[in-house]
Image (tube, rainbow, N blue to C red):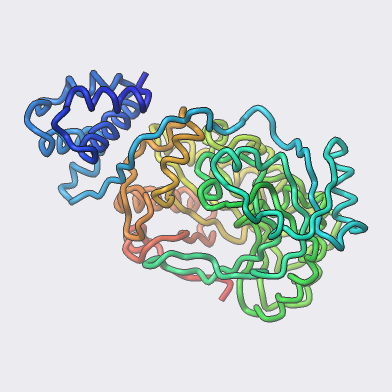
Length: 441
């Protein structure tokens, strides 16, 4: 039902006078409305009184069906209506998690501990020496299927660039001044909303062997907040990289900065065996189990993440939580309120340094990639429109309502919890009843 190719053929035959672009817009709206309403696209069209009144009227009516809340506000809406694509065998592989066939390592790393630990972790994989990742990448094409196969190859490299970079906060957002330590690229988890599936151009998962070079850069970041986890989960490979050991000791020497390990993993053994550092925080990305089951494949369950956080706190570390992305769906309020309550029932409130909130958002190009890789997902059924920063987002009043409710539920559990919004404009901060303030400044 509602296959992209079938809908495009149908629209072309039913409206032969429409040009290519108009035909694609109608096909897109029929497809999305059918999915949103769980109806066949033909039934959607039959329900339109303007079916025979021309393109403009038909599109207007379909937009009201597809974006009822946004259209009811009487504001001009800006929908993102790319051409439909068929998955055509490009779906994400959700049957196997991490079974690398090849471990590539750059010259000079043959006797490194990271290579030894990686080979021991994956004894079935072949180890192969390469001159450099750059040479390996030359003249190789990259597409969605390459991304789908990324868990088949691991690259151990000496990173010489982009050790630390500023968080790519888009224009118009309130910037929190976050910096990113880039010690790896590529994630073994399979999250439906992940921007890496559109952003990445790597044929595998890359891990930096020269983490001490990264740590030396921390001395230039006193007074700043820095973290890992933007391009690769901070802890999922920590048993083989031992990055946490080097980073913690380096951060300990620079008490003026705050370092955060962002993760969905429960791979915390190395941290548990270290003396805690007061300026190091272990932060978990969280969502209700309903969202995890449907959109965060291979990741630990919410209970497992929170138990790992509680254990970290018992060992003397502080923690943080990131509800990002928050996904709007029927029943989201109960699920997210329950998740907030579960956090405070599991983790000592005094050990929670901050909680961030951010609703689902992504660059326009990612929409088709998600549809192709996860054709059964329902996260795109929400009223997602082109926002102030050209990203596809929920309408801003809806976002503000979500943030008000979330911060309210958090405040009921602990009134002075530090809550901030991620990648939001000043209007939404104000509508949410929150003021930009940073405890790490």
